[in-house]
Structures are given as C-alpha cells and as structure tokens.
Image (cartoon, protein in one colour):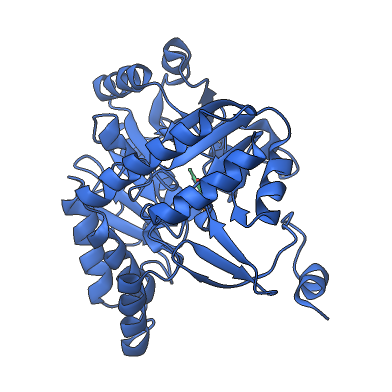
Length: 384
Ligand SMILES: *Cc1c(COP(=O)(O)O)cnc(C)c1O
C-alpha cells in the first residue's frame, strides 16, 4: 500500500489533503516522494517561520531531546522557565501558561478571563465577545468563540457565553459587550480571509474595554512571532493586551502554545485551576527559545522588505483583484478559483494555500530573496 492509500484507509477523513506526500524539507524548500522540489510559501500554516529545520532551532531541540525529552509539570525544567522569561521581557507582560496548540492556549485565555471576572465581580459576568469571521480553534469552546456560522453546526450544545460583533463596527461591539468579561481579537483574521482590523476601530475598542474593565485578549496564534513585521501584531496597533495567546510560529515545527498574561490577569490562574501534561514540554520549549532569540529588528525589517517585494510583484498581475494582510501574512483576492491557483502553483513547484476564497501566502520570515523571487515568478505567471 502506498502512503496515500494507507492514509485514506486508516486516517480519519477530516482533511482534504492535496495530492502530494512530502518527505524532506530544509529552509524554504520541500521535496516530495518523487524527489520533486518545491518553494515553500506556506510554512506548514505559519509554523516554520524561520524555515524548516532552522539550524539554531535544530541544535537546541536535538540537545534537549538527548538531555531530557519530558519530565512533566510536576517539576522545574530550564527551557520552559527561559521561554517564559523571554515571552514576558519581550512584551511587557507578566507570566505565561504553556499549552500544546493554539486552541489550547485560547482555552486558557477563556478560562483566565472568566475567572478574572468571577474573582472580581462574582458569577454571571462571563461573556466573551469575539468578531464575526474570526477563527480561534477546534475545541468546543474555541469553535464557539470562532465567529463563523459554518463552525456552529453538528456539535450542539455549544459552550454558553459568547457573543459576536462585526469587525469594524464599533457600535455593534459596544452593544454586544454589555456585561462582558473580555473581548478576543485576531488583529489580522487569518483563516477568515487575511483581513487586518482597522487600527482606529481597534483603538476605540481597546479604550472602551479599559474604561469598563473588559479584558482585551489578542489571539496571536497566527499573527505572532514576527509574522506581521512586529514580534506580536498588537505592537503594530500600539497597545498591550491583558492576555495574548500564541502557538504556530513559536514552535517552528514542534507543538507548543502559550497564553501570556499581563498585570491584571497574571494572578488569576492559581494552582489547581489549570494544567497540562505536555504543555511547555522541554524539547518544544527549547526550540521556541531558539525561535524568540532570533526574532530581532533585523529579521522584522526583512519581513517588511519581503512584504514589499511580494506586493510589488502582485501589482503587475492581471488576475489579482486585491491584496490584504500585514507583513508576511498576505491574502490575494483572485479573478478565478483560489483552489485552482494553489494547484497550478504546486504543479510548477510552489506551495501556497487558501484562506476562504483567497490565495494565502505565509512564507518563512527569512526566506532567501532568490527563492522568494523564484516563487514570485511562478505565482505571477499563474496569476497573469
Ligand atoms: C491556527 C489558529 C488557531 C488554532 O490553533 P491550533 O494549533 O490548530 O489549535 C487559533 N487561532 C488562530 C488565529 C489560528 O490561526
């Protein structure tokens, strides 16, 4: 049985997989089981942010794997402590809970927001406002938090206590936020079509939340770790949230999620209120330390330089209607079917993905400029 047949037979059919089996990757290149080479503008959905098997990440992970792969959260381990310190000192937050995925990091944020409000105001003030078109994960609470009706089928009953406001509509937000504990924002809605929120709207929402002791939670699972040209996207919007979550690019290929809490919320989740067996696993944490240490101003400037190269190349394409997003998280509205564009690119050796009806680009933050240009040549050919 070949891999595809075996996969179809034994793996639950929850994914519409592309007709390719990858066997190897390095930096911004991937190879399939026929030895065909591809340029990677997908990074495993914004995970391999520094490129596949990046050298510093690889040696940190390998060393930790040899020293101690797992000990559990019953004990102290150095990589987790160091990673928490990095996340806190680089952002002005206070402490961190480690999980294994974006959805789990968001679960922690939801629990933290609810308990913050419970501790201060008692029962009942638990509502969390999210935005229409958002994506926050696949667990029951996080699909409920996700502001897209397509996710709100089959699995009734959903979790109580969520309300949805249309992005950009401040009055709608104020209306929904009555008696709310928190608002949860993706500053660039990734899965929802790579839509950056309007900065004026965000400022008004944040100000309103500060005035009313409504926690501001940023879901930086996709936008975080340099993706938008800042370490976290809230920096580009000029505020510090009460809680932010991140995952994807933090791990650079290994599963890790983090819920990072600020001044108001750091004392909320005390012993016995939350936990995880694998969360902050030493190998994943050692890799994440190597990731964060490399996200400096030079790398972030490179993100914006690469964004400009992509936007300039796309501006010449007949089939490009518009380009949205921030940094190296870009969505292309195309004349035609985005899925066909993805396939045409793959046949020519370029991996891109979709977001709703758009073609989405998530290349490595440090993709070598020659590979970026080579990939853009393929993309512009397909879109001309
Ligand atoms: C991917 C994503 C998630 C879910 O992360 P998982 O690791 O798949 O659980 C949550 N929020 C946002 C914004 C995401 O892009």
